Image (cartoon, rainbow over all chains, first blue to last red; front, side):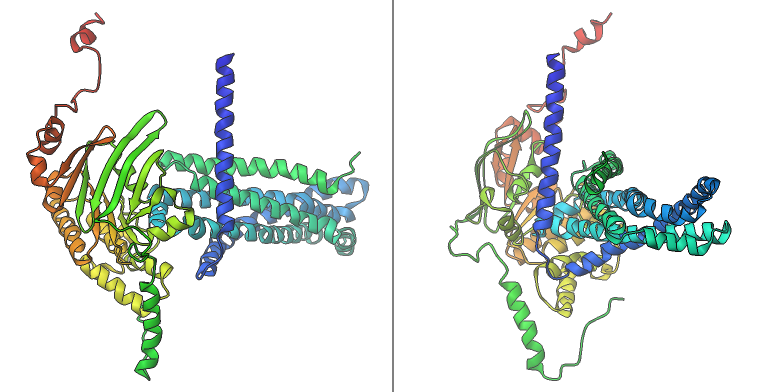
Length: 260
Length: 305
């Protein structure tokens, strides 16, 4: 019993230590003031993190939008409400699937890459080398990646939503023959800018911050071995996915409230 | 081929002025001897009562060490005695549990994060792994500290980088990527990068490890030659007795967290301490035993039957 308690205590202390280190990394990363040449570094990361993630986001969005339209049509046609497919798809995408699925894909594509890149720089002493040259790696390496992640994910979410809705229209209107007036006007009448689009983007912003923080910290804190980087990359994807799903529930509860 | 930034000067004074201003700014970077408030002694580094432990394992236990200004000082000792850790403590990357580490009169252990970053601009470090930036070419690796810490125009940076690369014999390799370099070349590029800002103090972590005889000789000559040419102080961590005794003015042998031998290469060769002798002659058995502590051999082998 005592041994179990000791193990639990040790585990709690380890977790607390990790949390403390991650807060330290976040503080000094955000604290470092922009300097000459920072825009160039940020631009490079915006390309790496954002532009290179576009393909997977667009392909997934197309697939999800098309499937939602198919499933919606199958069910709603039974009660003669196929005109509502457009509104249903838009609400599901803007409020939930857009931010959540884009967040999960982003964690797998860009988050893991950020962790691996920073971890490998640590393993090959590049971060230590920078420090010994009087250059802060948190400013030079970590900050551009963190900011690029925070900027890119909401933009990718917007693109995801747009492509998915377009794909739903393609399947629903052009293929299954839903009346285009009902499909599109139902959507534009039913969707509210703040309640649906705005709150969805708030979720995306929160996910962007959390995923980017997890990704850069796991890389910076990785054990400098091949196994250490592998574990850190896995942790980034697992922690980010769990955090996105858990925080999504909390945000939905807080923002859309009054469920009783 | 890298583009050379040059324009025909219309008026020499107009073109020279920005260069001179930039150069002045560069030379006004924090240097060890720039602040008259600091206590200057004949020793560049003074370490007193240094204690450091990792978990239950004691690495240093009241270590005292001084590095004379302008010298090539070597740190030697069996593997795992914390020589690299000592370099990291001197560079402020690790804080010791106790003791004082003064570099040019400045207490490193009490520096803030910002002060440490400023302090490190005045020192160079050559890592065992070279630590070159893998996404940068040789030229950009050497130019990195100049671009980050100075406002020098690109054509002046080019001149300086080529001078540094020339001093290590790799001016012709400027466009290569680190993956295209041999181990010896990587270390020479890292050395060119370490001296890019003309540091007053350079630390070398195992510079000779894994080098072929030619690279070994080249690196030893470079360390010794640069120390004289740049009037720097060098601290070399090495296992290589032959090369190190050729270039070092002073050698420390560290074992069990303390200094067990100190002196010039000649003095250490005649040192009476058995441990120092074992290390200097590379004897397989002695005070540092060949066998890891274990039960009696016969009992261990025959006891099972």
